[in-house]
Length: 276
Image (cartoon, rainbow, N blue to C red):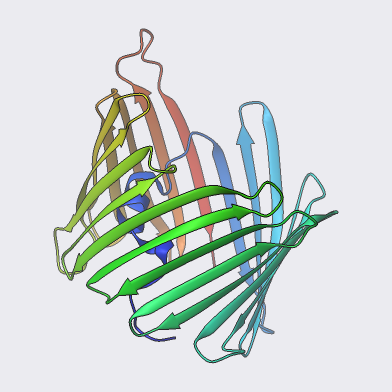
């Protein structure tokens, strides 16, 4: 693939991941194993309140083809096939969830040095078509996305965004929800290895005249331990601790509390990811 501006979904992704990724209030255990034939097996169990769910996933890569298969406790089989460079500079992704045959989806991504284009279509009788494009460079990119319902003849979504990236920072502005919200974010790396970072995000919803301001960050205690925290102007405070128990096996403990609530009862989550 070429080194271009990236996909539209990459705009603002670094800041979003720092503020949301790995935060949870559930108990989660993930165990991964790898066979000599190149098959990766991952088992996940999640306890949400008094309800437990789980899934088993397999991944196999052969040349330019990646096969993902997942079966969960609700007997839903999710299959994803990813083909790289069937046509030069493209990636083709086909997915379906059985037994719902109408859940099929086909996506094609095209990468160029100064532009990317993504087209996705649902494989059913009333398909929704999603199109996104980005132009620019790895340092500055501008793009948009739209979804069109072929049955109703209406747009289901349209979004625009712009991003600026430097080796030690990145910023983005996204106009989404059909123009109802605007989100601006800024992320700054505090060290050369990008192990510690600070982020700020502000979201304005015009229909409700509401502003949400969130600050957060991550700090590397050492090469095995990382601490993350976030706080918004509505009083919701979240924090997590990640520690690599053994190589590639991570323990995550996270919690969240509403500081403006009357009971201020915190919610805690525990996640363990074990890999060989």
